[in-house]
Length: 251
Length: 251
Image 1 (cartoon, rainbow over the protein chains, first blue to last red):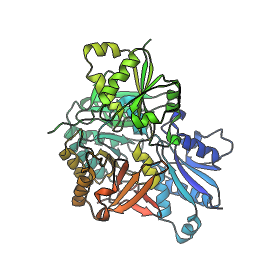
Image 2: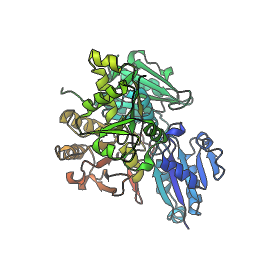
Image 3: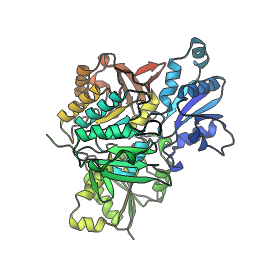
Image 4: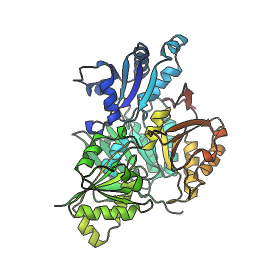
């Protein structure tokens, strides 16, 4: 009997942000693949065979999970947040798309499904108020898999479209320049009072939220655990909350 | 004792896509406000006083909910999907921001919080595969609260940035032209083979998914219950799934 590969989203950190669908799928699974810290979240679930691997091994991880599912196992592929937003779902389909004829034959009967989760930008936006309440875009600032020039161009065009923006992976130890580059483009395109929201470790006990004007924002305000939301030109503060109005005026 | 206003997301339709956080908040609430069909989803929860209202009454609904919370009630404001994405969270903060001095005084002690949910684009993307696996944007096609020219400009700039795009509210009975306008702009900016995904009633028993090339897409393929996802220029099909690769080439 062919198995199943379920690519699931665990949400940003708090167990209260997991859906019932994902919880039920974890309970019925035999194996779980994922990056070390996500596998860590399933420790103590004795029915699961855990297969932790490192960052940047996404394609190899996807292939291993497909092999096990082809043997009839009920396999989980874990992502934090939502698996479809800068996470494992695309890697699984890349593995399927790039399969050798032998792999394709073995994997053909595997039932591959994706189950959504609360992605970091939605959790961060909720904690901040409603900064994504009008049209917005979502950009991964890592230049690991795309040229820095493409990132710059997208931020510039997004600013010209007056999208609010959510930035994933603003910087990491190995690539510290991501957020600095973004701030440079934003300063060229946006007014100094533009609101920049920095949400770190959202939904976890050590969550921090910070809102500053673009003029005061500095690159060291974000690290790899920070989700950045840039308001559009109408984004405002009311009390401790930040929101973007639903309406947009005629020019 | 001041009450609380919890703005919560019920997800796109299936009860399996509700988070534990929202489920617990519903269980502890005294009153629920929302658009008729969302209130419908709570029928049978006898502990709740239900306050249903019509579309386009969002600000009035927000004010009523704040009044009740100011009287010490535990009030829910319901949205489908995520409350922060084209839903009630911004309306609540607009009400707070536009309060009269008397209202501001009454509402000052209310604890306002937002709880995220699975928004339609994440649920649709998961069912389709991973079309939002690279940078993307999210545009409400309704010109109810913004000029049509702003929508056109945003779609054009998003295509030039090569964002995948999620379109909410592609059309409605009173505003049928939204998706037709979007298709016209896309045909000017994108190649005819660009993938257009139409997800209707996602996560419900009558869900339908359809994927067509831009050249074959017609305005009548979307209605108010459809979430549209436009791929970027690299978005591909593998088997029955659609995905956008994580990598983007150098020009």
